[in-house]
Length: 44
Image (cartoon, rainbow, N blue to C red; front, side, top):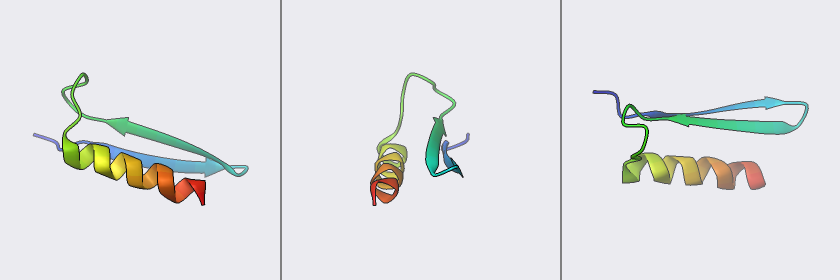
């Protein structure tokens, strides 16, 4: 089973962060931490 993904695309200085997990109503802790880290990275 897939552990999920976090993807970022930056266009014209706008970051679009998308995330996916096979169980769409549940995000495991590791994926949440990856998502939070990507958001923090883009705030800089």
